[in-house]
Length: 89
Image (cartoon, rainbow, N blue to C red; front, side, top):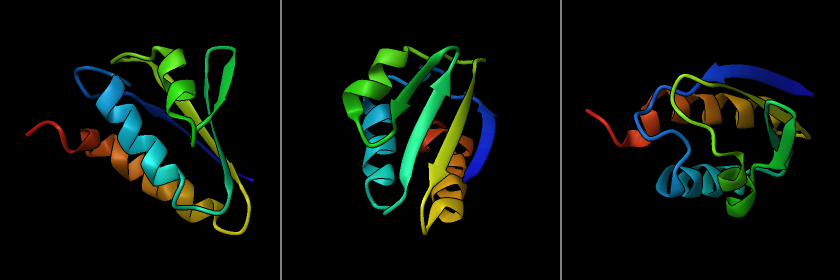
């Protein structure tokens, strides 16, 4: 299992477009990928699941992956967060 916590730094948090990018990316991996925010754990491959978290800027979220490509999954998802979902300059 690979696990990493990251702070949400993009202005709009996990809004619809960011959530769509995240779920699309998560679906490219064979590993099971989950997001944990507060007490909630959702499948990162589920757009609706991500949206239910209602995570905003300044909050920390934990990415957990389990499977053959777990390290790569966490690495790429962290990269997406760090790049602010490619929505800000």
